Structures are given as structure tokens and as C-alpha cells.
Length: 173
Image (cartoon, rainbow, N blue to C red; front, top):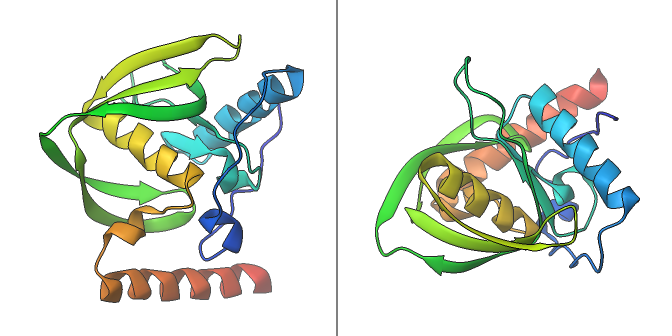
């Protein structure tokens, strides 16, 4: 397994739509392992392939956050929201590509998602709570959308400027 570099906003690759995965092979399984390792190391609860400059429709997530919780890593290939609840939830979201910036985002409280697993089998599951927020956030990444795109323009611009400054500081070392 290899830790991958996470892209920081603004980066044009984060605004591109990821391509569907045709079939699952060993390269995809290695990528999934790398993504999980990178996500846990960050630490985060979700990571989409475009965040590590891989333009495939794949995401990983694990919302079992309590210290004594057993990890529940999930790998979703070509995920698609097939149903959303009318009920809405507001969560304070963050993003590994927008470090240390958080904002409240409103999304459907429950979603049903269809995807392909690492064995190439079609799966379908209903998510609620943090899992629902996380899977929607990560699917947004696959569509070139960031959580800050839900914010008012002024707040979005302020966060973008902070990220530009962070990237300049990181480049200087």
C-alpha cells in the first residue's frame, strides 16, 4: 500500500467529472487499498479518486469514528444515488482537499446508493446520518463538485483565498 498525495483546492482536476470504471481488476484493488490507507492517515472519513489525481469514479469511506469502533471501510465503484429522502440534514462538512475549513451544508438525510464492489458485483444500500452525508460529499467529488460550491459566493471565495495562501506556503516548504 502507498500513501498518495491529496490534491488541495484550487486544482483544476478537482473540478473535472471522473470517468466510469469499466471493470474491476488488480490495479483497481491496489488503488482502493492506497485510497483507504491515505484516507485513514489524513485522517478522514472519505476520499474520492479525483482527490489523488485519479479520474476514475471510485470512492472510499469509513464513518465508524468512535475510538472503540471497529473500522467499516467501504469501496464504491461507479456509485450512483438512486433515491433521496425528502427530509434534509445539515452537517458541518470538511474536506481533505480543503484542509481545516468547515461549513454547514444541507443535504438529503437519507440516500440509497447503487455501486459496484471490488468483486465486480452490483450492490445497493441505504445510508443515513453521517454515512449519508459522506457518500453524497464523495459522489460530488466524482462530479467535479466541492462542498464549498454549496456556500454563498463570498464565503466560498474566502475559503479559496485561504487555500491559495496555504498552497503558496507549502510550495515554499
